[in-house]
Image (tube, rainbow, N blue to C red; front, side):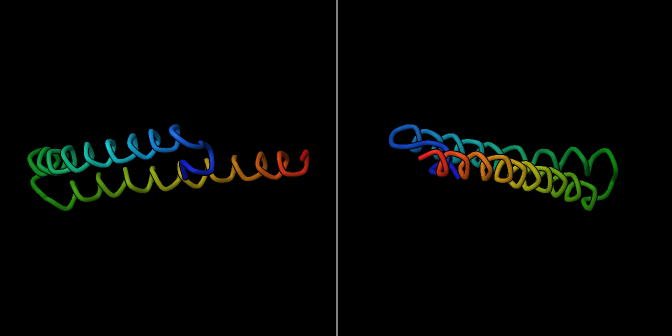
Length: 79
């Protein structure tokens, strides 16, 4: 996705930001599951919380893709 919006060094920076967020998620997710398990007594609820965040990320990804597609088509038509 960064290559569709950015070029050159900016695309590399975008990929680095995505990797950093992924590494942060790998650190935070076990704590989220642990806290949720501690509060509810079931590890299932923690997995639901993490799944909800993943679903939110997928929805955001598809909404950005839908916004970008008409802009790309307009830009191609102008050239």
